Image 1 (cartoon, rainbow, N blue to C red):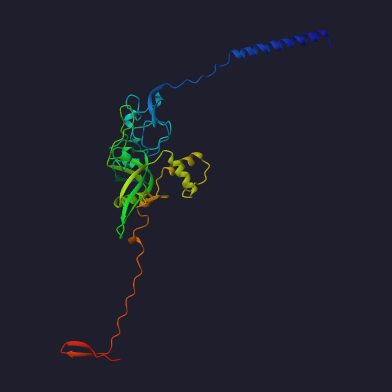
Image 2: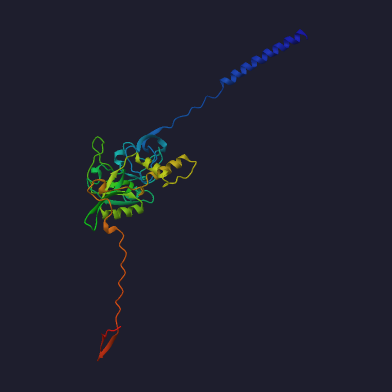
Length: 328
C-alpha cells in the first residue's frame, strides 16, 4: 500500500478519536441535574391510633399518640396538640374502626355521657347486663372497665332432710367489663397510677343467651367476679380449638385469620364450666344432691273396691235406701 494512503488513514483515525472524546465531554457537561425530592412541609401534630382499634374499643393512653402531619392534609376534625389532651380522651369508645397510624377524628370517639355511648361500646350481637356486687364479690374494687372476668354463682340448696347443699360454680367465662357503677374509665392518681374504689354495680358485655343466664343467676344466689389474667385468652382459645368447640376455617390471608382468632378469644362463653360443693371444702359438708331433688317414687295403685252382696232398695216417698240383705 502507498505510504501516503497509510498516513491519511492514520490521521483520520486520530481525528475520529478526538471527536468522540470531545462529544462525550460535551454531553456529560450538559446533562440535566438529578431531581431531588422535596419533603412536604409539616404542620401541627395530630392524634393518631397506635394500633388497630375496632368498633367498641375503649381508649387508653397506649392507644393514641401525637404524630407530625403534612400541613396541607390537616383537617379541622383532627385532634391537634395543644387543643386536646390525650388524658381527656381516656375512657371514650371507638364508634368507627381505626387502622394503625390513622388520625383520630372527633366523630370517631364517643364520650361517656353522650347519647349512644354504651351502644357504641358493645360489640356486634352483644348485650349489656348489670349485676350487683360488693367489695367482697368484686375483687375488692380491683376490677376496672376493659378487664375480663369469670362469674361464679354461690348458692345453698335446702334438702328435705334438713341438710343443705352449699355449692359454687363458674357459670360464665371471659366476660368484658364495660363500666363500674356509671364510670367507664379507670380512676388514676396524680402520678397516673390506677386506684381501686368500691362500687355497687358492674355492667358486663354478654351474648343474649348469657345475659338471660346471668339474670336468672342473680335470683338463685350470690354472683362473684373472678378476674382473669391477660394471658388466659390465648390458652382458652387453644383449649377450645383442641376440644372441637371452635372450628377454624382454612384461609390464605394471615391478617384475616388473626382477626378471626382475636374475635374468638374475646368472646364470652359458658362451656367447660366447673363447680365445687361443700364436701370439697369440708368433710362435714354433704356432696350429694338433696333428697327432694331425687326422682319421685312410682305411684301406688289404688286398692280395688270391695265386692258388695245383694241389696234391696226400699222407697219411702222420694227417698230410696239400699239395704244389704247378705247371702252368697
